[in-house]
Image 1: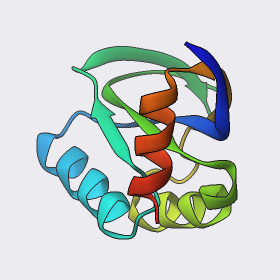
Image 2: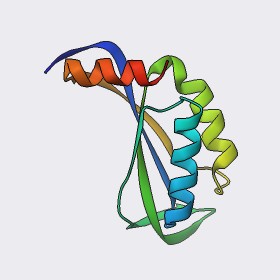
Image 3: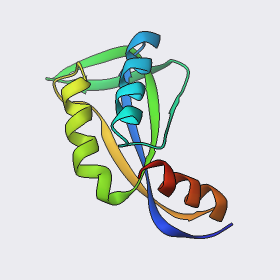
Length: 110
């Protein structure tokens, strides 16, 4: 593992607990080459305050692997596909990655 030769972003996005929605969103991002890989985590319980009320929601988290230059278009696509008024979309820069993986990711986005 070394410093990633090409910058990588890990984008986290929570969605309602739906296999269908997870597959549709992941498929759209992959088809548009906005993501090299989308990992759909199993459902979990999210607790949060929305409009002054405590909410509980079964949600899945998508782990979306991309590059920084793709982020603006990826964000627009997520907003268009997402059913929430204000979806959770968080991008984290990856400091280090396996060189072979980073190379594959870059090639998958071209």
